[in-house]
Amino acid sequence: MKKLGLAGWVLALLLASAAGPGDDGRLAPDGKRGFGGGHPLGDLLHVVRQPDDADRRWLASLAALPGEIDTFAVLARDRYQKRGYFALLDEHADPELAALHAAFRAAEADAVATLQRQDARAQAFARMYFDLRFLLRAEVLDGYADERAELARSLAVLRAATDGHVQLSEPEARTLASRADLAASFLRAIRADLESLHVVKPEKDVETDTFVKADALVALAVARDKDREQAFELAARIDELGKHKQRMIEALGVSRLRARLAEALAARSKALAEGAKLGEQAALYFEEPNDGSPPPADIAKLSRSDRMRIARELATRALAKDPLHEQSVWILAKCVDFFDGEVFSRQHFDRYLALRGIRAHLWETIRDRKLDRREQEALDVVQRSSAPPVR
Image (cartoon, rainbow, N blue to C red; front, top):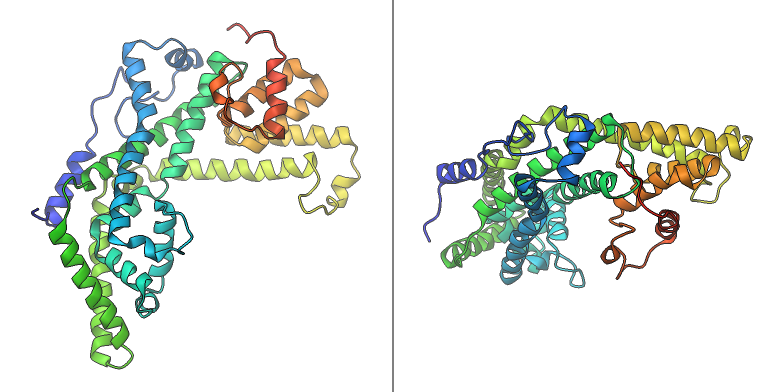
């Protein structure tokens, strides 16, 4: 198979990640169909509650994204197994891509020491170091799990507002729609990059070339302490590979999208951090510390009602920043239940279930699942209602 030069790779990645036309002005940040920003609550929920043919196709495409990405990831993992890359992991570790990528980054932090081991780990690391597709896939898949969860949880809460008890304010719905669009944009970029990097036929010539270069790199690392010239050559080789890798990373669709959407990503990170901080504060008032130590003196002296009241306020503020903060949803549900009862707390328990992937009216979401204490309590509250509220 003919190898692509640097210019060929850049062109392939640019074409693969090119944005398509939008639909009725409802665009995600990557220019593809999305919920769009600024739409009223009713319009946002209508897309989920009563989708037309175009909506159904779009929602189906969102649902298919993780499976398509996972398929490329599994194919890559199988190829890595055949090449012996998983020798970098402990022999008892599961052969998972995330673990392999993490182990590679850890070994890369002191590449010379890893190469000087002169064992299977050194050989596997050296082979990966020369495998451009491995390096790029690792970069593409960095953050995939978070974006996948972000999309799934945002859509779950939006759906729960149409088929369950969850009640959303206008700002919450817009936040969830925007976060779903942002996550979907990155998932589409990830899929496009992985498709560009996928090779259907075996790369025997590439593998042979990679293995020869890897063996030479290990030899250089072993000889560097005895030969000054070899040490300089090893440093130059590592520096050259690092620069080449960086040029290719910058050409990835995911990398270019990150650069273009840096402001949106920073805003999301800030909201998540602020929500998490408020959630931690709410937890201090809501429950005892996990280590069994007494709470701070200023909290311990408060009555149970006062602690629950403050926890409710802090959890509400946390969810204004991050409507998907699971701990805050639970705290708010329990606090509202404490003061107002199930009629008012049910919507929050139902949101908690949605975030956990559970729908009280869908048996398949709980059939083969062992519910934990919180999940069972929330499910009991939701199932005690006769029917979802009419909207």
